[in-house]
Amino acid sequence: DQQVKQNSPSLSVQEGRISILNCDYTNSMFDYFLWYKKYPAEGPTFLISISSIKDKNEDGRFTVFLNKSAKHLSLHIVPSQPGDSAVYFCAASGYTGNQFYFGTGTSLTVIP
Amino acid sequence: KAGVTQTPRYLIKTRGQQVTLSCSPISGHRSVSWYQQTPGQGLQFLFEYFSETQRNKGNFPGRFSGRQFSNSRSEMNVSTLELGDSALYLCASSPDGPPREQYFGPGTRLTVT
Image 1 (tube, each protein chain N blue to C red):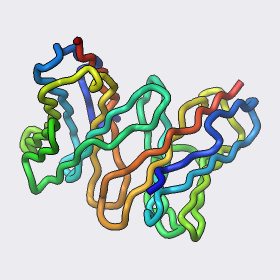
Image 2: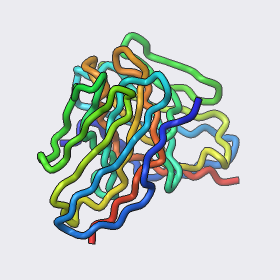
Image 3: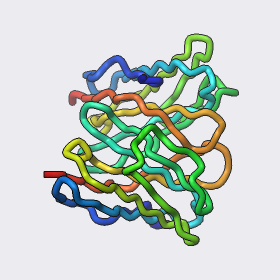
């Protein structure tokens, strides 16, 4: 049972525009969320996190929004750059250690 | 600080054999988690070790086991390998505390023939 879902397998965006990647979850006990970026043949690289006590967290060009009532989070990248082209994963965990559930990923392509 | 390291990076094994993978976490991190990544299933949580104790376990058969040493290094073992065990095995370490950011190693690519 997929508790974390990324329903868009791929996304293409023009350089300089906003990229919005979406993630839905089903378990209301999840209260900590992470976004990762992954290049082929490498491990995922941590990007940004958010806990359930917040609805927004920013780090440079990356902003994560959390809508707990909708069980939905999104990652905004502004402005998008060609180097952002990668697969992006969202992950979620309850407050019981580090067991994270991952989505299946969204492949982002930023077109120069 | 040095990142998470995993050895070996690539392995080819025959069905029925066993394999041991190794992970060295970031210095000071005591939590080590293991994940299996396959094209069809994405990243699936295997287990987490904290201070030499298994703290969380995913839904994998008992053929998958692990351990953690006093220096926080961790090993994962898969016995009686099956073709379906072919995957990228990722290790991640985290600092102490409640759920925190996990930092991943490059992974071990296991191919079972």
